Length: 186
Image (cartoon, rainbow, N blue to C red; front, side):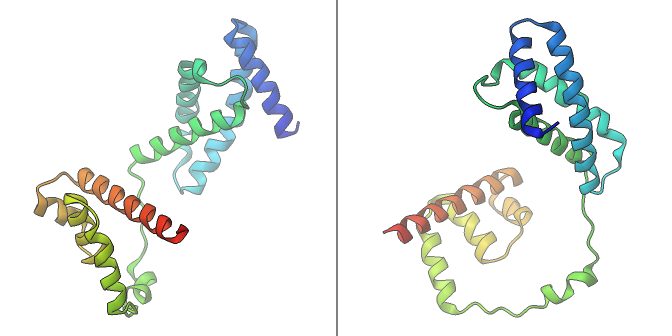
């Protein structure tokens, strides 16, 4: 069965289930579980994680679908909504496992030894842009982006939580990106 046809079938089953058809709901969950199981297994394999938690992620996804089924827009396809929930559940499972990718230092030595080709003009331009930021965002972006300090070091020095430093960095970079786009549009 083609993906589009299957997704149309899922959407019809979900509409019926929302209207109270228990048989349609059971059929939907069975069909989705087969598709989800395959997708989650692929996701674990791509992440290099053992497949032992596949069924847990499938069940968590089905539970989330059940709890959130009334938030689905019936005028939209069901597949993308289901895939988004499954992707988040897969990511959550991989995070819980503490999955870290280990890369031998020998394989990145050439990258680490690369010479700095940035000119003083680039640094001055970056400094000028960062000056336009306010308060802690400016300090965080300068320390991490320009001075190469770690998030942990900046957090300790500024007496902030690491997550707050990450948020300030993200927001500062987002602001700089928006300004850059605005300057290029003018």
